[in-house]
Length: 169
Image (cartoon, rainbow, N blue to C red):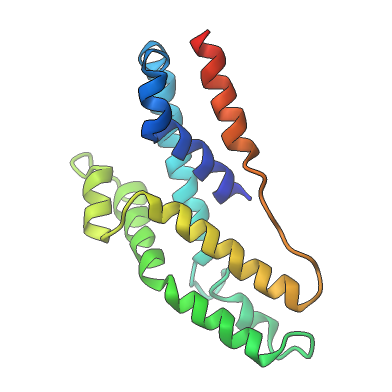
């Protein structure tokens, strides 16, 4: 949930759609928005990292199939699909690992977010795509176990836009 919520807030505040229309709000409250945008970006990247942390001690989308072991309630076809989907986002996840390590964890003042994305061969929209793909992985396992699914109602987007509009009045 955290990865999706932080990504939504970051995407709204950073996106052209609202930056252009409410430029006066972003200028008037520039200190707040510069901190909020950076904070939500950082939280999104760290949340994605935690979802995909391959470390032996981590409980993540990378490690959960091995930790679960063989299960009679999850068909082998589902596990193959899970692994296929996981492989399909490997390069993007690796890119966010680079951003996490070089831009956030081991901060170099000369290293910009633009440079980090360029070196990781990512676009800003990739952050939302990896969040959505991660949710798809979780839902694949939940459906197999007949535990329903998780969905998001974009309430963070709605709330962020509402705040920006109220500040505009």
